[in-house]
Amino acid sequence: MIRTRFAPSPNGPLHLGHAYAAMVAHDLARSRGGEFLLRIEDIDGERSRAEFVETFFRDLEWLGLAWDGETGFQSRRLADYAEAGERLKAMSLLYPCRCTRAEIAAAAAAMGPDGPVYPGTCRHREVNPEGAAWRLDVARALELTGPLEWTDERAGPQRAAPGIFGDVVLLRKDLPASYHLAATLDDATDGITLVTRGMDLFPASHVHRLLQALLGLPVPVWHHHPLLVEPDGRKLAKRRGAPSLGDRRKAGEDGQAIVEALREGRFPAGISLSEGLHQAS
Ligand code: GLU
Image 1 (cartoon, protein in one colour):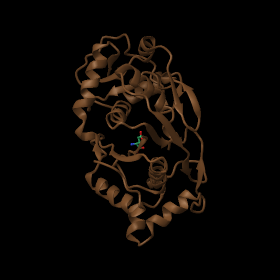
Image 2: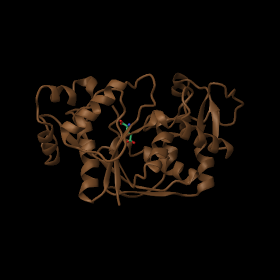
Image 3: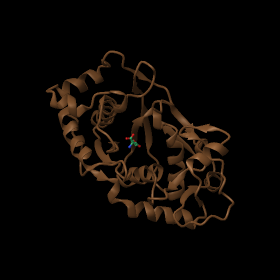
Image 4: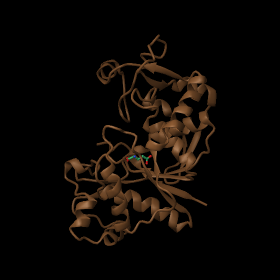
């Protein structure tokens, strides 16, 4: 049986791009007799706000996108993430790093999907681990796993290339986790068989495939869907004026009609779907 998920971060209200992502994950599950789960990615303590979570529930109900089972909250799973981090440390695959963003930007020789690629400054340095972030030694990890493959059901078979990010942070300095570690562990814990999310996160799947191999986790299939973009090709974003679903709900709009329009590929003026891989805003 297939199981998909929608995994919003409660650092702002949902907008039409989120409705599209939730609809895709919901419909893929329903059309194949599977399950659709909701996960709240709320480990970003500074930016996550509980009030958004309440709104997410109401928005999804209003859209007519019913989810199955208990809603997962990343903030309740920190012990699992820390345990996986300890396992990776015991495998000598993590190293502490105290470099600032500015130092990385100054030293980087290349740009990656998330900005300047960390050039490995601390990989072979003695660094005080107290309060440091922990990075994955990607080359060493790949030596251990050998070449890895994964499949996106739209883009086809992929050879894992986690090196495009450089040595990613797996344990942040303020948190025993990072997006990559938490999302990968959660998808395994939740039994997600079809990881459904936007094309902007396509590159992240290279890293997640490596983490699955290192931690002995099941390997799902991925479905990266196109993104709703503005005329300039950038992702919809609340901060650039995309109206929130909550505002539209309160204004008395019909949520199910909005989803029906998205299903049929009818978008508001100026908004279209883009296949672009790097629509990071
Ligand atoms: N929490 C992420 C977001 O809101 C999605 C992560 C994922 O689907 O893996 O963009």
